[in-house]
Image (cartoon, rainbow, N blue to C red; front, top):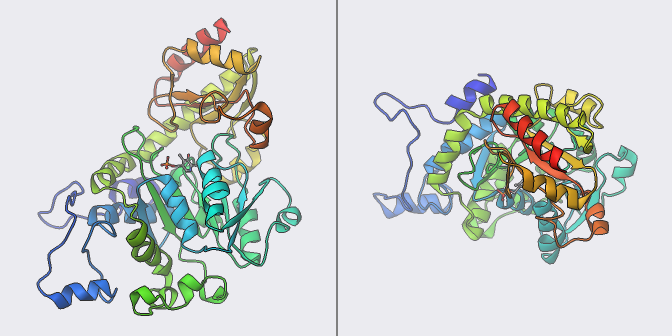
Length: 423
Ligand SMILES: *Cc1c(COP(=O)(O)O)cnc(C)c1O
Protein backbone atom coordinates (compact mmCIF):
# COMPACT_ATOMS: atom_id res chain seq x y z
CA UNK A 1 0.00 0.00 0.00
CA UNK A 2 1.08 3.57 -0.63
CA UNK A 3 1.20 6.07 2.22
CA UNK A 4 -2.19 7.62 1.31
CA UNK A 5 -3.95 4.25 1.54
CA UNK A 6 -2.15 3.42 4.78
CA UNK A 7 -3.44 6.70 6.29
CA UNK A 8 -6.93 5.24 5.94
CA UNK A 9 -6.54 1.48 6.31
CA UNK A 10 -3.40 0.49 8.24
CA UNK A 11 -3.65 -0.74 11.83
CA UNK A 12 -7.31 -1.74 11.93
CA UNK A 13 -8.98 -4.19 9.58
CA UNK A 14 -12.52 -4.92 10.75
CA UNK A 15 -13.74 -8.46 10.21
CA UNK A 16 -17.23 -9.52 9.22
CA UNK A 17 -19.81 -7.60 11.28
CA UNK A 18 -17.26 -5.53 13.21
CA UNK A 19 -17.46 -1.71 13.47
CA UNK A 20 -16.25 0.20 10.40
CA UNK A 21 -14.67 2.89 12.59
CA UNK A 22 -11.89 2.19 15.10
CA UNK A 23 -13.49 1.19 18.43
CA UNK A 24 -12.55 3.14 21.57
CA UNK A 25 -11.72 0.71 24.38
CA UNK A 26 -12.69 3.01 27.23
CA UNK A 27 -11.63 0.55 29.91
CA UNK A 28 -8.84 0.70 32.46
CA UNK A 29 -8.74 -3.03 32.98
CA UNK A 30 -9.36 -6.49 31.46
CA UNK A 31 -10.97 -9.61 32.85
CA UNK A 32 -9.30 -13.07 32.85
CA UNK A 33 -10.68 -16.51 33.58
CA UNK A 34 -7.85 -17.74 35.76
CA UNK A 35 -5.12 -16.42 37.95
CA UNK A 36 -2.63 -18.28 35.78
CA UNK A 37 -3.85 -16.52 32.58
CA UNK A 38 -3.25 -13.16 34.20
CA UNK A 39 0.08 -14.24 35.71
CA UNK A 40 1.49 -15.05 32.26
CA UNK A 41 0.81 -11.49 31.14
CA UNK A 42 2.75 -10.07 34.09
CA UNK A 43 5.70 -12.32 33.21
CA UNK A 44 5.56 -11.17 29.55
CA UNK A 45 5.04 -14.87 28.74
CA UNK A 46 1.81 -14.15 26.87
CA UNK A 47 0.75 -11.01 24.97
CA UNK A 48 -2.46 -9.38 26.13
CA UNK A 49 -4.04 -6.43 27.86
CA UNK A 50 -4.46 -6.06 31.58
CA UNK A 51 -4.21 -2.38 32.52
CA UNK A 52 -4.39 0.74 30.33
CA UNK A 53 -1.38 2.44 31.99
CA UNK A 54 0.72 -0.02 29.96
CA UNK A 55 -1.30 -0.79 26.85
CA UNK A 56 -4.74 -0.30 25.34
CA UNK A 57 -6.07 -1.87 22.10
CA UNK A 58 -7.26 1.46 20.63
CA UNK A 59 -3.81 2.95 21.14
CA UNK A 60 -2.14 -0.13 19.70
CA UNK A 61 -4.18 -0.03 16.52
CA UNK A 62 -3.24 3.62 15.96
CA UNK A 63 0.39 2.84 16.82
CA UNK A 64 0.30 0.03 14.22
CA UNK A 65 -0.89 2.56 11.63
CA UNK A 66 2.03 4.86 12.51
CA UNK A 67 4.49 1.95 12.28
CA UNK A 68 3.11 1.17 8.81
CA UNK A 69 3.31 4.83 7.74
CA UNK A 70 6.92 5.23 8.87
CA UNK A 71 8.04 1.78 7.71
CA UNK A 72 8.86 0.57 11.22
CA UNK A 73 8.32 -2.78 12.95
CA UNK A 74 6.65 -1.50 16.14
CA UNK A 75 5.34 1.72 17.66
CA UNK A 76 3.79 3.10 20.82
CA UNK A 77 1.71 6.16 21.63
CA UNK A 78 2.60 8.52 24.47
CA UNK A 79 0.66 11.28 26.19
CA UNK A 80 2.66 14.05 24.44
CA UNK A 81 5.55 14.69 22.08
CA UNK A 82 7.69 15.56 25.10
CA UNK A 83 7.00 12.14 26.61
CA UNK A 84 7.82 10.49 23.25
CA UNK A 85 11.25 12.11 23.00
CA UNK A 86 11.99 11.45 26.67
CA UNK A 87 11.00 7.77 26.44
CA UNK A 88 12.85 7.29 23.14
CA UNK A 89 16.09 8.49 24.75
CA UNK A 90 15.65 7.23 28.30
CA UNK A 91 14.93 3.73 26.98
CA UNK A 92 18.63 3.48 26.03
CA UNK A 93 20.28 6.04 28.36
CA UNK A 94 20.96 6.07 32.07
CA UNK A 95 23.04 8.10 34.53
CA UNK A 96 26.47 8.54 32.97
CA UNK A 97 25.23 8.37 29.37
CA UNK A 98 25.77 11.09 26.76
CA UNK A 99 23.69 12.24 23.78
CA UNK A 100 24.73 14.20 20.66
CA UNK A 101 21.86 16.43 19.53
CA UNK A 102 21.35 19.15 16.95
CA UNK A 103 21.18 22.58 18.63
CA UNK A 104 18.40 23.62 16.23
CA UNK A 105 15.75 21.34 17.80
CA UNK A 106 12.43 22.41 19.32
CA UNK A 107 12.86 24.48 22.51
CA UNK A 108 10.95 21.96 24.63
CA UNK A 109 13.30 19.16 23.59
CA UNK A 110 16.31 21.44 24.06
CA UNK A 111 15.22 22.00 27.67
CA UNK A 112 14.41 18.31 28.21
CA UNK A 113 17.97 17.41 27.21
CA UNK A 114 19.84 20.42 28.56
CA UNK A 115 18.00 20.84 31.89
CA UNK A 116 15.92 17.87 33.04
CA UNK A 117 17.90 14.93 31.66
CA UNK A 118 21.09 16.66 32.74
CA UNK A 119 19.74 16.53 36.32
CA UNK A 120 19.39 12.77 35.85
CA UNK A 121 23.09 12.57 35.05
CA UNK A 122 22.63 12.27 31.28
CA UNK A 123 24.89 14.69 29.44
CA UNK A 124 24.25 16.30 26.06
CA UNK A 125 26.46 17.97 23.47
CA UNK A 126 24.53 20.28 21.16
CA UNK A 127 26.02 20.49 17.66
CA UNK A 128 25.55 22.64 14.56
CA UNK A 129 23.74 20.17 12.32
CA UNK A 130 25.21 21.80 9.20
CA UNK A 131 28.82 21.17 10.33
CA UNK A 132 31.03 18.72 8.42
CA UNK A 133 31.19 15.04 9.36
CA UNK A 134 34.75 15.53 10.67
CA UNK A 135 33.60 18.36 12.91
CA UNK A 136 30.51 16.50 14.15
CA UNK A 137 32.51 13.34 14.91
CA UNK A 138 34.38 15.30 17.61
CA UNK A 139 31.17 15.51 19.69
CA UNK A 140 31.07 11.73 20.27
CA UNK A 141 32.42 10.18 23.49
CA UNK A 142 32.82 6.58 24.64
CA UNK A 143 29.63 7.01 26.71
CA UNK A 144 27.53 8.41 23.81
CA UNK A 145 24.31 6.41 23.47
CA UNK A 146 22.27 8.24 20.81
CA UNK A 147 22.26 10.97 18.18
CA UNK A 148 19.19 13.17 17.85
CA UNK A 149 17.78 15.64 15.30
CA UNK A 150 14.55 16.86 13.65
CA UNK A 151 13.76 16.27 9.95
CA UNK A 152 12.62 19.91 9.72
CA UNK A 153 13.52 21.97 12.79
CA UNK A 154 11.00 23.92 14.87
CA UNK A 155 11.02 26.98 14.55
CA UNK A 156 13.87 27.68 12.11
CA UNK A 157 12.67 25.18 9.42
CA UNK A 158 16.18 23.89 8.70
CA UNK A 159 16.34 20.51 6.93
CA UNK A 160 18.46 17.78 8.53
CA UNK A 161 20.91 15.81 6.39
CA UNK A 162 19.56 12.52 7.75
CA UNK A 163 22.06 10.29 5.89
CA UNK A 164 24.99 12.29 7.29
CA UNK A 165 23.65 11.97 10.85
CA UNK A 166 22.93 8.23 10.33
CA UNK A 167 26.50 7.60 9.10
CA UNK A 168 27.92 9.42 12.13
CA UNK A 169 25.66 7.64 14.62
CA UNK A 170 26.32 4.18 13.14
CA UNK A 171 30.08 4.64 12.87
CA UNK A 172 29.99 5.35 16.64
CA UNK A 173 27.79 2.33 17.38
CA UNK A 174 24.68 4.26 18.43
CA UNK A 175 21.19 4.72 16.93
CA UNK A 176 19.93 7.86 15.20
CA UNK A 177 16.64 9.16 16.61
CA UNK A 178 14.76 11.60 14.36
CA UNK A 179 11.78 13.71 15.40
CA UNK A 180 9.68 13.74 12.23
CA UNK A 181 6.86 15.97 13.54
CA UNK A 182 6.98 18.73 10.88
CA UNK A 183 7.50 16.55 7.80
CA UNK A 184 5.18 13.68 8.80
CA UNK A 185 5.60 10.30 7.06
CA UNK A 186 3.60 11.69 4.13
CA UNK A 187 6.53 13.92 3.14
CA UNK A 188 9.54 12.05 4.59
CA UNK A 189 10.18 8.65 6.11
CA UNK A 190 13.51 9.03 7.96
CA UNK A 191 13.92 5.24 8.33
CA UNK A 192 14.42 5.03 4.54
CA UNK A 193 17.47 7.30 4.98
CA UNK A 194 19.02 5.40 7.89
CA UNK A 195 17.24 6.69 11.01
CA UNK A 196 16.72 3.90 13.56
CA UNK A 197 13.95 5.40 15.69
CA UNK A 198 11.39 8.05 14.75
CA UNK A 199 9.43 10.21 17.18
CA UNK A 200 6.43 12.51 16.79
CA UNK A 201 4.47 15.15 18.53
CA UNK A 202 1.15 13.89 17.16
CA UNK A 203 -0.32 17.13 18.54
CA UNK A 204 0.75 18.84 15.32
CA UNK A 205 -0.12 17.81 11.72
CA UNK A 206 -1.16 14.26 12.64
CA UNK A 207 -3.98 15.50 14.86
CA UNK A 208 -4.11 18.57 12.65
CA UNK A 209 -7.10 20.28 14.25
CA UNK A 210 -5.72 21.42 17.65
CA UNK A 211 -7.83 18.77 19.40
CA UNK A 212 -5.50 16.62 21.52
CA UNK A 213 -1.91 16.53 22.78
CA UNK A 214 -0.06 13.30 22.02
CA UNK A 215 3.17 11.65 20.92
CA UNK A 216 4.53 8.51 19.30
CA UNK A 217 7.71 6.44 18.99
CA UNK A 218 8.32 4.18 15.99
CA UNK A 219 11.20 1.68 15.88
CA UNK A 220 12.69 0.56 12.56
CA UNK A 221 13.92 -2.67 14.16
CA UNK A 222 17.18 -2.08 12.26
CA UNK A 223 19.57 -1.24 15.09
CA UNK A 224 21.48 -4.30 16.29
CA UNK A 225 21.54 -3.83 20.08
CA UNK A 226 23.34 -7.13 20.66
CA UNK A 227 26.21 -6.04 18.38
CA UNK A 228 26.79 -3.13 20.83
CA UNK A 229 25.70 -5.01 23.94
CA UNK A 230 28.09 -3.22 26.30
CA UNK A 231 26.53 0.17 25.43
CA UNK A 232 22.90 -0.85 25.95
CA UNK A 233 22.70 -3.04 29.06
CA UNK A 234 19.00 -2.18 29.51
CA UNK A 235 18.24 -4.14 26.35
CA UNK A 236 21.00 -6.74 26.42
CA UNK A 237 21.26 -7.84 30.06
CA UNK A 238 18.60 -9.43 32.33
CA UNK A 239 15.74 -7.25 33.62
CA UNK A 240 15.27 -8.29 37.25
CA UNK A 241 11.82 -6.73 37.33
CA UNK A 242 10.71 -9.42 34.79
CA UNK A 243 12.48 -12.53 36.18
CA UNK A 244 15.68 -11.77 34.29
CA UNK A 245 14.43 -11.69 30.70
CA UNK A 246 16.65 -9.98 28.09
CA UNK A 247 14.59 -7.72 25.80
CA UNK A 248 16.82 -7.81 22.70
CA UNK A 249 17.10 -11.59 22.98
CA UNK A 250 13.52 -12.56 23.82
CA UNK A 251 11.75 -10.04 21.58
CA UNK A 252 14.35 -9.51 18.81
CA UNK A 253 13.35 -6.57 16.61
CA UNK A 254 10.46 -5.78 18.97
CA UNK A 255 12.75 -5.50 22.01
CA UNK A 256 13.11 -1.72 22.05
CA UNK A 257 9.37 -0.93 22.00
CA UNK A 258 8.58 -3.84 24.34
CA UNK A 259 11.04 -2.46 26.91
CA UNK A 260 9.68 1.08 26.55
CA UNK A 261 6.15 -0.25 27.11
CA UNK A 262 6.68 -2.84 29.82
CA UNK A 263 9.28 -0.87 31.79
CA UNK A 264 9.03 2.89 31.12
CA UNK A 265 5.27 3.08 30.57
CA UNK A 266 4.77 0.80 33.59
CA UNK A 267 6.92 3.02 35.81
CA UNK A 268 6.39 6.52 34.39
CA UNK A 269 2.81 6.17 33.09
CA UNK A 270 2.57 8.62 30.21
CA UNK A 271 0.01 6.73 28.15
CA UNK A 272 -2.20 8.51 25.63
CA UNK A 273 -5.88 8.19 26.50
CA UNK A 274 -7.80 5.89 24.13
CA UNK A 275 -10.20 8.76 23.41
CA UNK A 276 -7.28 10.90 22.23
CA UNK A 277 -5.89 7.99 20.20
CA UNK A 278 -9.28 7.87 18.45
CA UNK A 279 -9.06 11.60 17.62
CA UNK A 280 -5.52 11.06 16.37
CA UNK A 281 -6.71 8.29 14.07
CA UNK A 282 -9.37 10.57 12.62
CA UNK A 283 -6.63 13.13 11.92
CA UNK A 284 -4.44 10.50 10.28
CA UNK A 285 -7.21 9.53 7.87
CA UNK A 286 -6.86 12.88 6.08
CA UNK A 287 -3.16 13.58 6.79
CA UNK A 288 -2.03 13.02 3.18
CA UNK A 289 -4.67 15.39 1.79
CA UNK A 290 -4.02 18.08 4.39
CA UNK A 291 -0.21 17.95 4.05
CA UNK A 292 -0.46 18.55 0.33
CA UNK A 293 -2.62 21.65 0.88
CA UNK A 294 -0.50 22.94 3.78
CA UNK A 295 2.56 22.75 1.50
CA UNK A 296 0.84 24.35 -1.52
CA UNK A 297 -0.41 27.23 0.61
CA UNK A 298 2.91 27.69 2.39
CA UNK A 299 4.76 27.82 -0.94
CA UNK A 300 2.44 30.56 -2.24
CA UNK A 301 2.81 32.54 0.98
CA UNK A 302 6.58 32.10 1.14
CA UNK A 303 6.80 33.45 -2.41
CA UNK A 304 4.54 36.37 -1.50
CA UNK A 305 6.61 37.22 1.60
CA UNK A 306 9.92 36.93 -0.28
CA UNK A 307 8.66 39.52 -2.79
CA UNK A 308 7.34 42.01 -0.16
CA UNK A 309 9.62 44.97 0.65
CA UNK A 310 8.49 45.13 4.32
CA UNK A 311 9.91 41.62 4.84
CA UNK A 312 13.55 41.30 5.96
CA UNK A 313 14.05 37.59 5.21
CA UNK A 314 12.14 34.33 4.66
CA UNK A 315 13.16 30.75 5.49
CA UNK A 316 11.15 28.10 3.67
CA UNK A 317 13.02 25.06 2.40
CA UNK A 318 10.67 24.71 -0.57
CA UNK A 319 11.77 28.12 -1.95
CA UNK A 320 14.45 27.90 -4.65
CA UNK A 321 17.45 29.74 -3.23
CA UNK A 322 16.69 28.75 0.38
CA UNK A 323 19.77 27.56 2.27
CA UNK A 324 18.12 24.15 2.68
CA UNK A 325 16.58 23.83 -0.78
CA UNK A 326 18.98 21.10 -1.97
CA UNK A 327 18.41 19.01 1.18
CA UNK A 328 14.67 19.63 0.76
CA UNK A 329 14.78 18.31 -2.83
CA UNK A 330 16.56 15.19 -1.60
CA UNK A 331 14.59 14.37 1.55
CA UNK A 332 11.26 16.12 0.91
CA UNK A 333 10.63 15.96 -2.85
CA UNK A 334 6.84 16.12 -2.47
CA UNK A 335 6.76 19.11 -0.10
CA UNK A 336 8.18 20.02 3.29
CA UNK A 337 5.59 21.44 5.70
CA UNK A 338 3.32 24.43 6.21
CA UNK A 339 5.63 26.32 8.55
CA UNK A 340 7.55 29.40 7.42
CA UNK A 341 10.04 31.45 9.46
CA UNK A 342 10.37 35.08 8.44
CA UNK A 343 10.97 38.59 9.78
CA UNK A 344 9.46 42.01 9.27
CA UNK A 345 12.02 44.80 8.78
CA UNK A 346 12.53 46.82 11.95
CA UNK A 347 12.88 44.02 14.52
CA UNK A 348 10.83 43.14 17.62
CA UNK A 349 8.49 46.17 17.75
CA UNK A 350 7.52 45.94 14.10
CA UNK A 351 6.97 42.19 14.47
CA UNK A 352 4.50 42.85 17.29
CA UNK A 353 2.71 45.65 15.37
CA UNK A 354 2.39 43.36 12.34
CA UNK A 355 1.03 40.44 14.33
CA UNK A 356 -1.49 42.57 16.21
CA UNK A 357 -2.85 43.88 12.87
CA UNK A 358 -3.69 40.45 11.46
CA UNK A 359 -7.40 39.61 11.26
CA UNK A 360 -7.48 36.03 9.93
CA UNK A 361 -4.19 34.51 11.10
CA UNK A 362 -4.29 34.17 14.88
CA UNK A 363 -1.60 34.41 17.55
CA UNK A 364 -1.38 30.97 19.18
CA UNK A 365 1.17 28.76 20.95
CA UNK A 366 0.69 26.10 18.34
CA UNK A 367 1.87 25.02 14.91
CA UNK A 368 0.68 22.66 12.24
CA UNK A 369 -3.00 23.40 12.71
CA UNK A 370 -5.75 23.52 10.07
CA UNK A 371 -6.14 27.22 10.91
CA UNK A 372 -3.28 29.62 10.18
CA UNK A 373 -1.52 30.72 13.34
CA UNK A 374 1.69 32.47 14.24
CA UNK A 375 4.02 33.18 17.10
CA UNK A 376 6.91 35.55 17.77
CA UNK A 377 9.27 33.45 19.95
CA UNK A 378 11.08 36.55 21.29
CA UNK A 379 7.77 37.90 22.66
CA UNK A 380 6.14 34.57 23.55
CA UNK A 381 7.81 31.18 24.07
CA UNK A 382 11.31 32.66 24.58
CA UNK A 383 10.34 36.02 26.12
CA UNK A 384 12.62 35.60 29.15
CA UNK A 385 15.70 35.60 26.88
CA UNK A 386 17.73 38.63 25.77
CA UNK A 387 18.48 39.15 22.06
CA UNK A 388 21.94 37.72 22.70
CA UNK A 389 20.58 34.59 24.40
CA UNK A 390 18.05 34.17 21.60
CA UNK A 391 20.80 34.18 18.98
CA UNK A 392 22.72 31.62 21.04
CA UNK A 393 19.62 29.40 20.98
CA UNK A 394 19.58 29.84 17.19
CA UNK A 395 16.37 31.90 17.21
CA UNK A 396 16.68 35.36 15.64
CA UNK A 397 14.99 38.05 17.79
CA UNK A 398 12.91 39.14 14.79
CA UNK A 399 11.85 35.59 13.78
CA UNK A 400 8.11 35.07 13.29
CA UNK A 401 6.94 31.46 13.01
CA UNK A 402 4.00 31.34 10.63
CA UNK A 403 2.08 28.07 10.46
CA UNK A 404 0.09 28.16 7.25
CA UNK A 405 -3.28 26.45 7.50
CA UNK A 406 -5.84 25.14 5.05
CA UNK A 407 -7.67 28.39 4.27
CA UNK A 408 -7.77 29.80 0.73
CA UNK A 409 -4.24 31.14 0.11
CA UNK A 410 -5.60 34.36 -1.45
CA UNK A 411 -7.50 35.18 1.75
CA UNK A 412 -4.33 34.63 3.78
CA UNK A 413 -2.28 36.79 1.41
CA UNK A 414 -4.91 39.56 1.65
CA UNK A 415 -4.65 39.45 5.46
CA UNK A 416 -0.83 39.51 5.40
CA UNK A 417 -0.88 42.34 2.83
CA UNK A 418 -3.09 44.63 4.95
CA UNK A 419 -1.06 43.93 8.13
CA UNK A 420 2.28 44.56 6.39
CA UNK A 421 0.89 47.80 4.92
CA UNK A 422 0.19 49.06 8.47
CA UNK A 423 3.79 48.44 9.65
C1 LIG B 1 5.57 20.41 19.67
C2 LIG B 1 6.79 19.62 19.43
C3 LIG B 1 7.25 18.70 20.39
C4 LIG B 1 6.58 18.53 21.73
O1 LIG B 1 5.34 17.96 21.56
P1 LIG B 1 4.10 18.11 22.59
O2 LIG B 1 3.07 17.26 21.96
O3 LIG B 1 3.75 19.56 22.64
O4 LIG B 1 4.57 17.61 23.91
C5 LIG B 1 8.37 17.95 20.08
N1 LIG B 1 9.01 18.09 18.91
C6 LIG B 1 8.60 18.98 17.97
C7 LIG B 1 9.35 19.10 16.69
C8 LIG B 1 7.47 19.77 18.20
O5 LIG B 1 7.07 20.64 17.27
